[in-house]
Image (cartoon, rainbow, N blue to C red; front, side):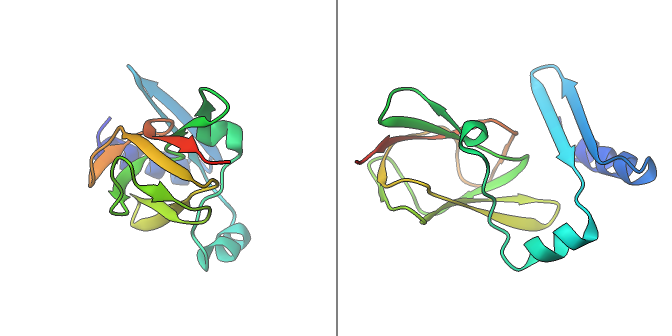
Length: 136
């Protein structure tokens, strides 16, 4: 699904006064949610997304975690590569969607074992981004 179709979906939400919209096209699935102005103002100062652990990652083993994208957009990696060590609270990557930059921070201390995406490429909701080995 290209960016133009996503923009059209956003316009459809605006015109139809929809709060949520979910569209599936082939293997691509897009989920959009509209927040009230009050919620938007509260979130505007700090645009880091914190998703429920279950939505953000897939647990493979106790110490291996696959992080997934919480939204559709263009990913900007934070100079990370395989074998990079990460600390809790580090910015792992940014997803830019609709001219908003959303920082995704680490909930864990660990080592990146694998990168599934390239910098400055489009990502889908739920797409795998990193494989991390959690350090206890």
